[in-house]
Length: 253
Image (cartoon, rainbow, N blue to C red; front, side):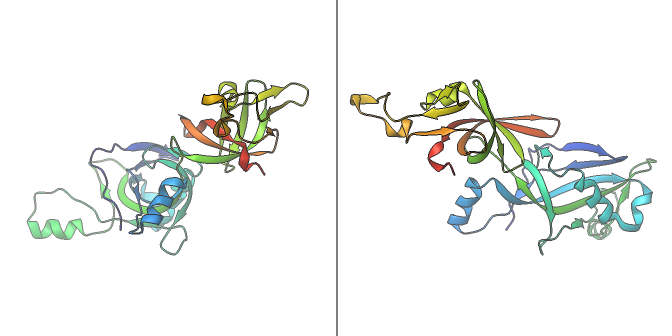
């Protein structure tokens, strides 16, 4: 079951190798299981059905789907706002990469029967005297879709007095600032060059230790695995980075 595309969604156009690709809003494949629906919200990985339009030169006629797939491959590991994430791979119903051409939607003044026949045709459309042939297509893709408030994990690749840098799922960079680290009881040790936290020293209401804030004694250093909450998402030129908060060191491994 596929959700309908929102009529308010805008399109994003990319010029790639002399061709023009416009991706429409992605629709997420849904299931009737409540547990599966919950997993979709908590997992950053989602399989989506994506529709788009492309303008190709006549040289693409021998194999249009292959040409479109080649263009889409150039968008791999790039963030697209309309898709809502970073495209990781193309998939079809068998789990393999595949592009499906959609019927042409001609707007002519011919009879109704002719319109029905034209709208069911699969092929391209030429606009005025332009050399491009316009196609509509659809494909399924695996995307990495982080969202604000989502819990993710990352491996520490940089540990400085002002922030730590994590690589998340080997896809993007995440920074957690000094303010966020100190907010959960961490202090930077200039000798060991690590962020460490000890039990005690801070107390919650009533004078008792707030274990939700302090947690166990531990430290954060290079190559450690840290769980965090996404606070902000930055995007520039198809690449994204994250700001994190609430590092959870209880899951360090």
